[in-house]
Length: 349
Image (cartoon, rainbow, N blue to C red; front, top):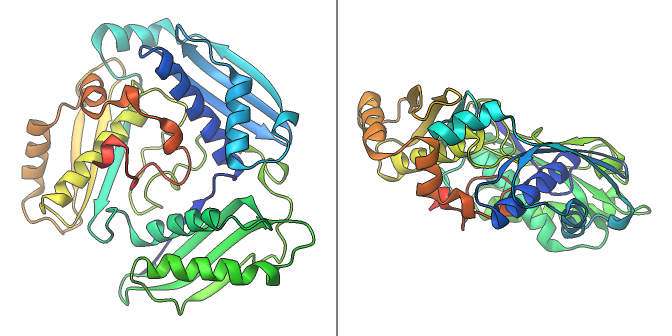
């Protein structure tokens, strides 16, 4: 079985928007732990639009936050971007269910996944694709620009990478042949770091040119890279994005809790692979369902695992926020290169 996963870099237009949205969340929570934030961003060329609902005693400096994100990514001309904001307060109807009952901020289902195939407990093709883009950024090559995508196809039967693709933005006047040695070396290092083969097909900028990139090649939106944010398609997804939302939104906190629980199940050797689903109703604190799928790798029964989860974890939004310290997280750390498998965030401890 050949399975393929992809990742995108911090300079991808959708990821620029995710990073701006999470910079707003982090800033609001740093000044007011009771902040309610649902901030989305759109970018095209030099225009950035921020829209959503924020109720907080803190007033973010949107221009400073945006320019800080753009400079961190390495986007040229950060001062030239035009920023518009369309922000209102959170609906009082939603606030009533969240604040009064400590309930979920919306309905929905969230999935968490873990596997023992990598140290990060992430699927191999996804882990390698993500690692490759992080290595590419660390190279710091002046002819490479911030926008990039990677894709890894992995054969689970032979346990080999079959195809490795990286498309990376580059300077005008630079050819594919100029960047090929750099990118192929990154591919091989990423594979070797996971003890994998390097005799795979290598595809570097297959179109032959990638000069125009980021928001000048495509528009960007918050929440459009939900598979790259999670498990590369190996796990089901409830459809809700993470970035731009404070943790009373179970799209975020529920997904982090499900991942934390799935890691716990694998770490305790209850199963080799585990997918956990949590489902919530708006304004209701306890999940309406808890579901587990171990894909036949479980060493105890799945009903026993569900019973264990129900007994061991406080799955109310407030319980999750408290247990994982979600009001004190710097969400800038997870707004690019995936929300899972990273050190220094509480759902990975």
